[in-house]
Length: 454
Image 1: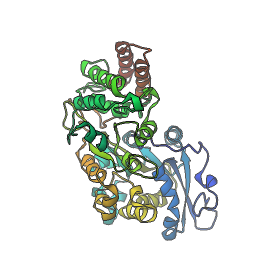
Image 2: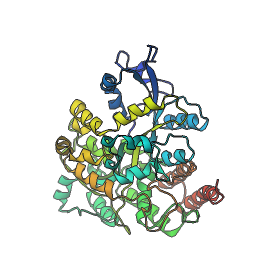
Image 3: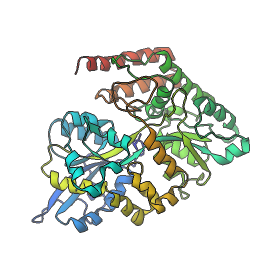
Image 4: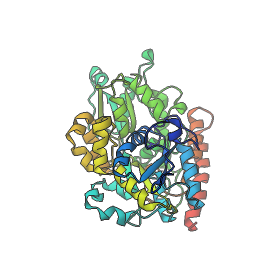
């Protein structure tokens, strides 16, 4: 996730507006004191795609001089806490929020977000059906749209084509995890401090469990069954976790519990890992010759599997309108602009095609300039985004919609606590069986709340 959820720039602080950090930029932090001007406040995660949005605000102002957007950037955890508090208490401090795919269905059910279904359908050129269906479904509740996608991602395996060729290994188009573990063992090189594969193991439901839950799914495990009985210490869940930990120990990076998205990106980009399983949105950074030593040397294949046909995750950052906003009409004008087909082309033409928000609109993957900039990874990303199934990502059915997370309010805490237990296992401080039994109890308390309808 990410995400993505894990691609973070330095947080600007909970109350620091981007307009204050970048003084003199037109359209930033204008409080709307001029007659006839409405200020719309947007609480945003502080990541590159949203920074690009801020940079392009003058283009919005050209056609909407009566609307000023006041962007407030926060680090992801701060944003999640501040936005949740605002909508839950009906504070109405923020008109628009960047909301993750995990939160949207929960907030939609609680009526904390404005229902955008009819607004989105009013303008045929906006073309809601152009959004990848899994992404669109992920920001819906009861068939109604409660946010619109800004950028999205799934996951795939990135690998060094040059190292595979040197080792005489051919990567299958749809590899299994057993094959990947074998390749990682062959390509690990202690003499050059090169890992066979980089896998996230930093504690956190959005760090460790983003990739790990997809492994659990494809091994036949799951967080809960259809009766909301926790499955954390089930045989399939244990098999997947043990495989993940064993692969890290045999062929992964050193000190894996300190590695999340950013750390794996740096490791892989600096030629210190032969493979990396992570977000499709990472490819733009991997292929940036200004910052990556492996640009042009990387191949991409679908997420490895065990018992399922597909195994990629699904995440999106979305724009939602606070149900308590006093400026819903103006908020929608901006949301519509920032998630339109035209916006994707604007980013490409003004800032560079590799910076076009990925993973949301099918039409983006038909733009010739984007296809050229996207190389191998862009068409594969489009295929994966169409294939993933957040309603049934594993072997057995599940009572929620989501791949690398469970769409219940308690999951953030369940995932965080359980990931810390597993980090202790990886660090040799706790046996696996004990960690899974403890995680089972944590998860079951949340499952009991679902059984009781809380």
